[in-house]
Image (cartoon, rainbow, N blue to C red):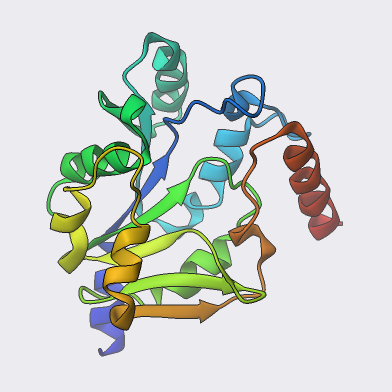
Length: 209
């Protein structure tokens, strides 16, 4: 793929930040947990994607409890999708979200609870992206997030349901998966517990010092 075409394809990808989960292990709404910058965890995650200049959509549940989050995000000019089937699991949330964004070149599927990700890592993944491949970051031998899906896979993502996420597509189309080695531990560090949050906070602080 020539450089100009590659740039066009990258710019037409849409970032989907999945933020409709229950966070039952955290003991509260982890999306609202604060960093020293006074940004919430969700805002911190979003901020890693904003420098890329891609369309960005945050996927929330349709529950009333997410109304205030949507208002906050809209106040910052961030688009939201409300997923009526979010309670069924991540697969249903992803399917609804892909349906909502319409005709795009592909999607960058990211998790809302991974605020330690570097923007440069996402940029690197996008340099490998095209319509025919799935691109995954790999750190220390482990596959992480976000995962970039080319246009070919959008109809399949729309068929997901329940708690079955996109891992089944990674297995089924393993020959079309591009694994990109990265030096970013943030691709593996999701926040499930308060201890996880402390660990990510420390990592971000050390990285910026």
